Image (cartoon, rainbow, N blue to C red; front, top):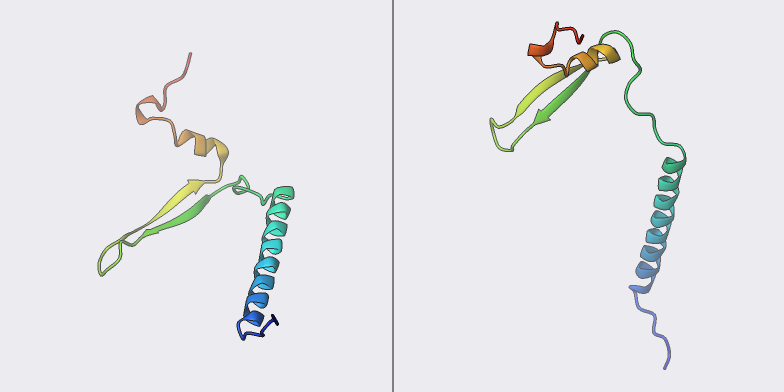
Length: 92
């Protein structure tokens, strides 16, 4: 029985090679990120970091947008979690 060349054979071979290259590249990127993780957060300082949050439920008129201002000073950030009734009281 002789192998018969089918027009799909090159497509299957090229697709397999492409999947192999993408798999190798994905493994390479994941290992590089494990060795050198990207920095997290922002540098402490004065002012605020602004975060824009948008939600759109789809269709006309639905959704919500807001801007959250997060202090860059670590002490001011920590104070933002203190309940209002406890502010101004000293722990003695």
